[in-house]
Length: 196
Ligand SMILES: CC(C)(COP(=O)(O)OP(=O)(O)OC[C@H]1O[C@@H](n2cnc3c(N)ncnc32)[C@H](O)[C@@H]1OP(=O)(O)O)[C@@H](O)C(=O)NCCC(=O)NCCS
View 1 (cartoon, rainbow, N blue to C red):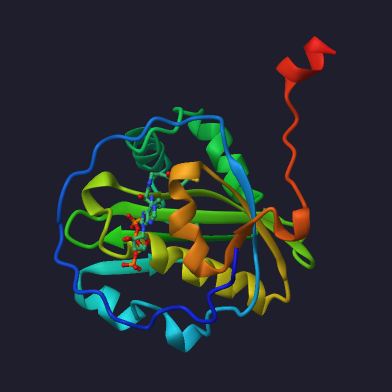
View 2: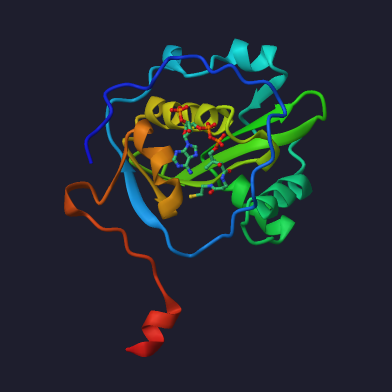
């Protein structure tokens, strides 16, 4: 997969809420993908902070004021399994970088992404979601661009994620490639181990 040399700077013209999309069904199948250079310059986001704000969206970079029950509800709405909210709290407390978008009108979270890692070399991106009613207006890309930039600004250059096959087209233009240089991701599988 060839790299895209830069992130598009064309501004989207979202009007919200736009449409409802069908619910996704979470599958275990995921593809390992790694972020390659160049990083998106902070001034080159596809939607600026100001544009987001003018559309009624506020960006947050900490878990302060984040309603974890609602986050869990949005996870479920996009097809992720419902998880214990207390465990989600612990996971977020152990997260290196996170971003969420609040819709001012409802004061609700509508987009989220986070990354864990060693804080120096490596990061893994998890839980990239956009509320189905707000998908397709650039919010997923907005949180991903900022999350990647935050990691690169920390000097972290090995950024990976697991992508379901149907979402790879979302990650590719941000610089993610599957099986970089033939390197394959492997996931521990209890089922596989039992067969041995
Ligand atoms: C995947 C997801 C985060 C994308 O968020 P979004 O806000 O709808 O996406 P955006 O509007 O920011 O789209 C950005 C670009 O990616 C494209 N895109 C979005 N979803 C895509 C997909 N599934 N496949 C290919 N391209 C996609 C858009 O067309 C847009 O292209 P453009 O910049 O050329 O206009 C969102 O659809 C979602 O929450 N899905 C369910 C949860 C999920 O699958 N998360 C990923 C787990 S691996």
